[in-house]
Amino acid sequence: MENNKSHENPKPSNFIREIIDDDISTNKYGGRVNTRFPPEPNGHLHIGHAKSICLNFGIARDYNGLCNLRFDDTNPTKEEMEYVESIKEDVRWLGFDWEDREYYASDYFEQLYEYAVQLINKGKAFVCDLSADEIRKYRGTLTQSGKESPFRNRTIEENLDLFERMRKGEFPDGSKTLRAKVDMSSPNLNMRDPVMYRILHETHHRTGDAWCIYPMYDWAHGQSDSIERITHSICTLEFEDHRPLYDWFIDEIGIYHPQQIEFARLNLSYTVMSKRRLLQLVEEGLVDGWDDPRMPTISGLRRRGYSPESIRYFAERIGVAKRENMIDVALLEDSLREDLNKRAPRFMAVLRPLKLIIDNYPDAQTEELEAVNNPEDPAKGSRKIPFSKVLYIEQDDFRENPPPKYFRLSPGNEVRLRYAYIIKGTEVIKNSSGNIVEVHCTYDPATRSGLSQSQKKVKGTIHWVSAEHSIDAEVRLYDRLFTIEDPSGDNWKEFINPNSLEKLTNCKLEPSLANIKAKDRFQFERLGYFCVDYDSTESKKIINRTVTLRDTWAKIEKA
Ligand code: ATP
Ligand code: MG
Image (cartoon, rainbow, N blue to C red; front, side, top):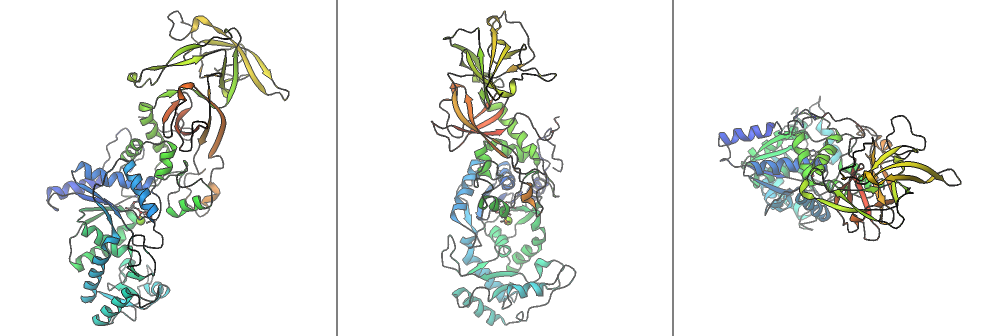
């Protein structure tokens, strides 16, 4: 769907599903639907990949079809098992299952080699001795046709012999390639005798040293789809110009022909998504690793507190488009709020504590007050929270000299303490440097929440935590990693938000949170949704703010 504000209508308009419906009605693949998600294991997955995962696995689910997980591992220099494992973890976490269909392009190396020999035998591929630079020069430009390689007319026998010797390791890296013999004057540069194999004496993460020639992505991809009998090969728009080449390969070899369908990749505002840039952020220490909660990686979003449901919902809301567009990151955040609002239990916590003393409250008294766990879900019931003479409130919720329309606490003003009493500010105590260190107030015992005679109304309600019963925690507040909507320019690093992480080390939690564990999610009333960090321990609790309660940057139009 082109419109990124489409959440009034969460059902995506989907040109891909229309194509599939058509193919089913004409029985094109015998009614079969088999998609695949084909990551290259050279980096961690990000929210853009999540879009592709939800699309491919979602289609398979809705059409009673299958979706394969295929690692496109044709490049031994950049790929690692670590990435394979993290990709599998991320896909599983998103809620999808490839069952026994975990495939690797490297498993097809022998088959691909045989296909290449077939093309040589047809006179459709040749061994070329031009260097990479020369090949580039010979290729020509968009306006200028290319020049044929002087090695293009080698005999089939010579090509077969040289290609076999390339495989055997007789030639050094870069000295020869196998190229398709297509058309050096094609207006499509991809068709100008593209390289199919290069020599690389490198150890591959799965095939070890069995090979020293490796297929190019363009040579491996379409044939891998064909071998797996993929019906609809869904990929991003940059492969549109490669489709004629994929079609050419498959038709020349004469094998099963899947259909490629292109869609627009996800671009998110205030975010970079290129693997190269994400790697730079990590390697240059600009973030704390791949799973830094500010990263758009799946692992970062997970650590930040995103739920798989919210990401799937987001993918559904953005739908698929045929043209490049930019999705507002606020839509991702909004999808999360909508999910957590229904599910996250509420608690009270004070992030920047200010001591509040109720002068007329009995010194040694503690009351257990009733608090609702989730107003959106009555089945979640309520809990007891202790109330006593000395509390913490947010520094922000008190002003000695309140501006107009300030309905929180100030001297002489009344405010309700959530689930408790109405209090009235009386006195402010400052230290020698003039900073407020504590605030005094009085309470009205007749105003306790839930008491039938408590009819009194005040304009503001603030949250609090009983000082004596409170639990200490560090809370990390995250903000967008970039200060501008589109940090895709070359000077992107200049726009890193210097305030994207704020650590608050003196936060006070209500005692119901004594036993929180990593990954627990909840709402702190009035403050936002939070999630316990992986590094949190019983003695040092660390909590990430997942998202604020409302969008603080832009306004999302609500239906
Ligand atoms: P690379 O530049 O390394 O190829 P990539 O982001 O394309 O990076 P792949 O591992 O090749 O990474 O991607 C796997 C699949 O995810 C591909 O099918 C690709 O089209 C899809 N994909 C990648 N980025 C996005 C994105 N931003 N939006 C939607 N799909 C994406
Ligand atoms: Mg790619």
